[in-house]
Image (cartoon, rainbow, N blue to C red):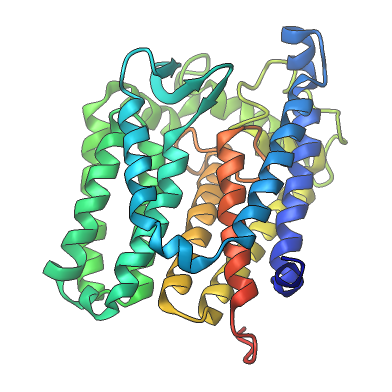
Length: 371
């Protein structure tokens, strides 16, 4: 285990730990007011975050130590278990509904979000399937259709919750994995256009999603309704200026900006640490993506290479979507910022994913540097 830790990509590990540290600091800074108001303890969310970070680090260490061949063997059972969890979410008495969405399974005082489990399960399963015979991806019938069949089942179950944001993240991750294994550009262009059409149909079919799109296009048209979060996020980012108001000096955390320690924590970073602090976070995620894809190129076999592509894409896509939402570039989706946003299941499974990515980097052939 110690030998494997010494072989991991030091830049990738350093980026992960720095993002975690930023998350711990910003969780306390952004949630202290809310913690005091609701629990009479400004450290309430901070202490919970420390617990989840500790569990996440332990999970990352476990994923780093696991034998990748064992993971390859258990791909199908893991996928089946994840699908069962997705089904259990919709069973009354088991699934928990929050803000109109049923996305959690209650386990005593804690909750598990099965969509976080299925993200990793899909990366693992697609990596196994595509690595068995990489050339099959050139055939639409033998490579693309089976991949779309599994993706369709998973996306349908997630949309029942409903959760369009997670559906888009998983679909985009599979798209990049298909590209990485060598799918024909013509096939992928067709899939991309079909995907855009399906997203448009899903938005048009749900009035609340249409209202989000209108709020994205003109948040000031409904400043106290659907446009409220976007406006408050921009009011946090703007006054931050170049250097920010200072750590702990946010004004928006005084219950102006909802979800300021979860989905919109990037706005708190911009307000307190300014353009420089926000840019640092963006740079760290780009470094993560670079080192993740570098790990994929150095992987000793197709299975590990595709796993690295999938895991890097999964985390990178979520980060880009979250920061795009907070800065007003994308509509509100409910996607958290990996490593930084407060959250239990999300952080735990993100750390498992990064542990697997570090595992791949540790066993990769480093005799030839790739930049």
